[in-house]
Image (cartoon, rainbow, N blue to C red; front, side, top):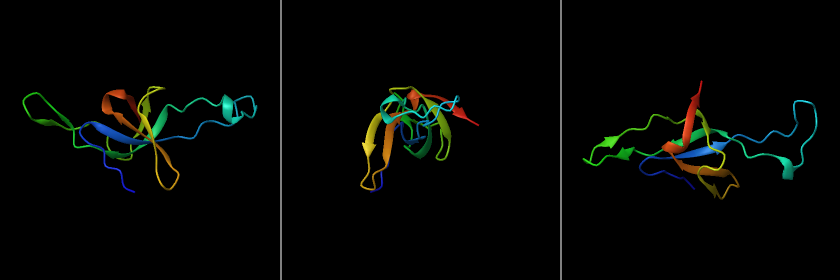
Length: 96
C-alpha cells in the first residue's frame, strides 16, 4: 500500500523508542516514551493560500524532523509499519 499525503500533510516514520536509559536500565514497553523524532517518507504538494497559489513545503522526503509529542494521526500499513500523518505546522525543526 502506498500512501500519498495531500496538501500540507507529511508522512513520517517515527524513530524507535529508546530501550535502555543512559544509566543502563532496560525499559519495559509500558515505560517507553513516544518518540519525537522521525524521518519524512512522503510530502504533499503544499498549502493552498487564500488567493489559490500553492505554497510548497519546507520539509522534503528523507529529512529527519523533530515534532510534538502528540502530533499527527497514527496509521498502520499492511506490512505492519506504524507511521504518522501530520501537518507541516506540527514540525518544530529539521535535524541536520
